[in-house]
Image (cartoon, rainbow, N blue to C red; front, side, top):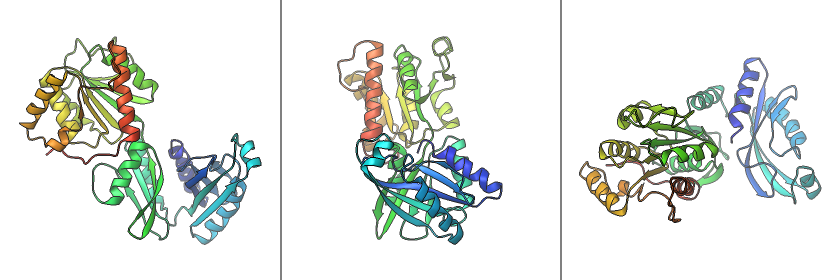
Length: 340
């Protein structure tokens, strides 16, 4: 849903200008569907629209049906088959199917919920909208910890950038994530940190470096990167880690690394890694255990850090770290949160 905040912002502007609005969201796709689940279109009562749910294949029908939704206030589930000839015009090799959930702003999707979504996104917070497809209930969830099945689905959506339909008890819930940019927090402005920061930015991470050693963390060594000279526990208290955050500890200094790791393990961040040999990591785990960190939480720390690809140079180690981060983000089920 990378374009969803922009499209929803347009919907809010239109509503404030007095237009009645319908919002269509792709909730399921099959085959070679033109747009992924979570794609959004907003339609005014005069027929103007922004966004896309099919790359142009079925927008006309969706806009027509939106007028019914605006008039009645009742949500609709629309299913379309994208024929091969239409698929070709949308740049696809074959057809597919798409299911769209169409609702009126002011009905199940309240203006207050829309404002809350846009406010959270503006603050860089992940927010997940859960829509009861067979009922009339909606929930806005901040994915920050474990909990019931719906909360776990929200956390998974925020972690993976995926929107999906899940069945919980007797209800089908569409879980739509509206995510901020990914974040990488590097604790320790070591030589590995420099290529890692550059590579992470290429992968669309917002990077910040935390290191109280002012000689290491400089704008000359990390151009364009946010730098904090606070101690890690202080820096992370000011700007906490979220489910879209990864933390990498690189100093080899327990006075700096340990507070950062404790904060990370108490957060819903998707990746925690620490530089060091197997022996260093074993000592680290023993030391953190004496601080009351539970053994289940300690297993979240990747150490030695990075995928085992035989990396030797700082740049190669950075590749291994970023690859392991990607694996955790995209392929691994979110673990329970909490360190004690």
